[in-house]
Image (cartoon, rainbow, N blue to C red; front, top):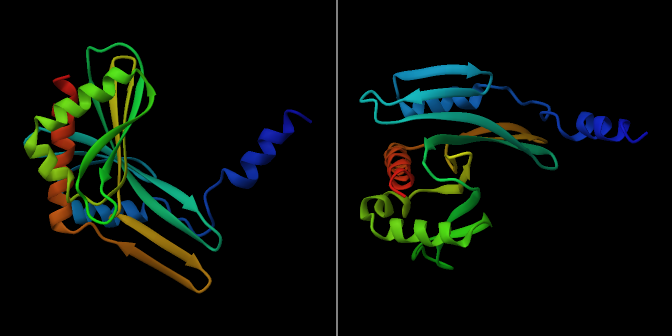
Length: 196
C-alpha cells in the first residue's frame, strides 16, 4: 500500500492538464524572440543562442493547473559556472506597494552572505537595474549548487491561458520592448554572478 500511494498521486495530479499541447506556446514565443539560433531539445523545450555568441539560454514550458483552466508558462534558464562552493537559493523581487520603487534579493536558503553580495553587486550595476525595473517577470530565482549558478526567470509574456469552460485559448505575447529588456537582463545577470 505504501508503494502504491505515490504512484496513484503521480497518475492523478502530476500529469499534464487536458488540452495542453507541448511546444505550441514555445512556437509562439520563438516568433516573439526572433532569434535565428534555436535548437529544439524536446517537446516544450529549446535552446537559444544570440548571433554574437554572448548568451546561450534554454526555455522550457511549464504548466500550472487551476480549476477549469490551465496556464502554460515559459521558464528561461541560464547556467553560469562559478568558482564558488556551497549552496544557495535567492529570489529577486520588485519593491513598492503600488509603484515599483526598487529591487531586492530575498534569501530562500543558504548562507546570508550571498544575499548581501548580490545586493551590493546589483547596486553597482545601473545597466542591469535599468533592464530589471520595467521587466514584467513573475518569478526570478538564482540557485547555486556544485559551483554553478542557475538562473530561472519566468516572464509574464510568452505564456498561454487555456480555459475549458467556456473553451478558449489566449496567448500573451512578449512585446519587442520586453524582449529587449529580457535579453539585457539575462546578459546582465550572467555578468553579475560571474563577477561574484
